[in-house]
Length: 136
Picture 1: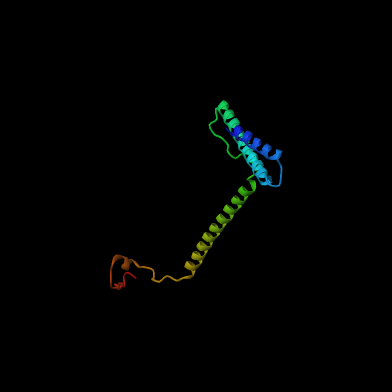
Picture 2 (picture 1 turned 90 degrees about the vertical axis):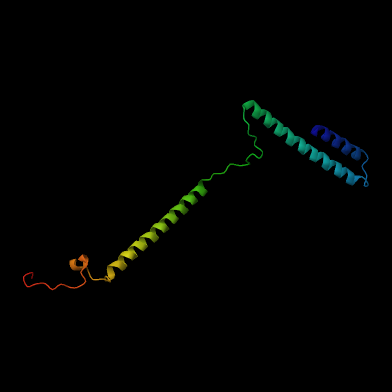
């Protein structure tokens, strides 16, 4: 069908070329554009058909619609990701260490709010029991 459309468009174009005049110049340009568009469609269908036949022969079920035009390495983007991950890891580790060091400094400088407990307080005695002279 596409090949027939190309042939019909070529016939129309040749008819307008045979009677070339200023009056039918636009019609000739339109016929030429239609012929070129039909040829592009035909070539596209031919390539898809050839690729489909090759895929069937090889047993592949995937058809590449837009093949890559150039190969590119992803080395630089991978390197950038690794560097970013390292920077973020270092930042998190540094912040954590700074918090730990700050906490250690603050706790070593602060005096305890409560005096150290004595065995009598631990036993639950509310009064201080005077010691006898024999106990010392």
